[in-house]
Image 1 (cartoon, rainbow, N blue to C red):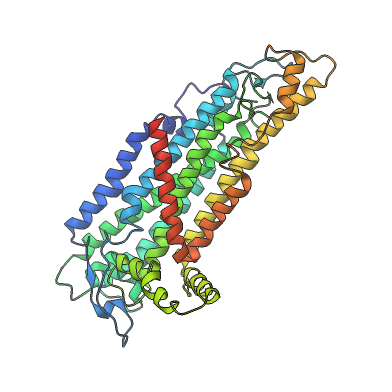
Image 2: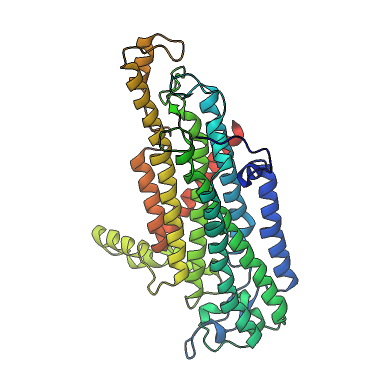
Amino acid sequence: MVASPNSGKRSLLTRILSWPSAQLFLVCFLIGGVTLCLGSAALSVYNWEAPASYSCKTGANCESREVGYLWAPNWSLTYAILGPLALFLMLETLKGIRGALDYLSKTEMIRNDHMEPVSDCVSSRAWEKGTRARRWFLVVCAGLVPALLAYPEWYSHNLTRLMAGVCNDCEPSDYDWGLAAIIKGTGKVVSWRANSAFDFVAFTCEALLIGATVACFIYLLHLDQVLPGPEGLVDKCLVPNLRSSDPRRGFQKFEQPLQLMLNACLTFFLICYSIRINRLYMRSVGYTSVVDFVQRDVTGLVKTKGVELQGSGLGSKAFGLFSFLFAAQSDPRYQDFLAGIALMLIAIFSLVVIILTIRGAAQRAKENAEAYYEGENSQSLFGLSIEEERKRTRKMTTWPLEWRYFHLNALLAIMGMAIVSLWYYRIGFYIVLVVIVTLLARFKKAVGT
């Protein structure tokens, strides 16, 4: 059962939902974008050309390369644009979910044991109030774990090496803006204290982004406990809104927040791909910047493979094209695995929310209505005739998204391709272009409405 409203201090979720989404985006942009970019400019690490001795192993033939902060898309692009955009979308998702939960009560979809409407917004109130278990999950998974991922890496990979003034165990891929103070021969000087302090701020932004993302999905996964049902926090009966002409009978109100959640997933894919592409550049030899790497390695099909396949047959051309696009770099590092695992978990959690939570609630509501109308003493619940309400119940669809755009198979295919493309980074680049166009089209549509 739902406890009485808390007259004391508001819950964390209630306070989060009171934040203006545009203000959240602006604050994240100012912290992650303006502060870090200006900080890198003040320290002169925004562009930092590492000499050849730091760009490849001893004895190899290579040139100097750009390792500055602004040239690292997994940092500059993520915390200036993609991170704030993802959090904006997630906050809009949470607000949309609260509106959909309120809609359940306002349209008499929540009933008591006597099938009488429950006017109080019991589901949204229970969701905002939360439970002790959810609070502990937030502390551990959204607070402690992100800190353990970010700060030990900063300490071992940045602070200790900067304090020592030299890195004997570093590989060429380790020398970037985070170790600018120990990269000699650049003509620039930065103190190790300023360098390590800037690194600390950057890793703090990383921990905050990870923690905020985890917190959002904890709140979304908790929906399963607050949607009316016999095993949840709201021990009420959920029925479809038979006054609605939409075949989803009220559950269409979850479509907009679920689409925002999917848009956030696409944004997280861009973040994970930027991590992957920067790591590949740092482990490569012969490229002067990450832009040069993308131009020559990732999208160099026309200039390089096009010449090689010019005199080949159709089968050889197709095989050569396939081999080029689906070439995966060997020797993956733990950052690559973390990016892939993070995106996979985001995709799985999103599917759980859509399929098991919202679709499961719709299915439960349909079954409740069918069982009620099969009873001998059934009466009209929504002011229509019994036959009309039975007919509308039978024709109800339980898929919460517009099926012709987001059918389950299509959704699984899109998420599967996104995860696989992190490994096959060349084909992933073209998927990135599709994702960017999709996000821009949806943004244009949202602004137009």
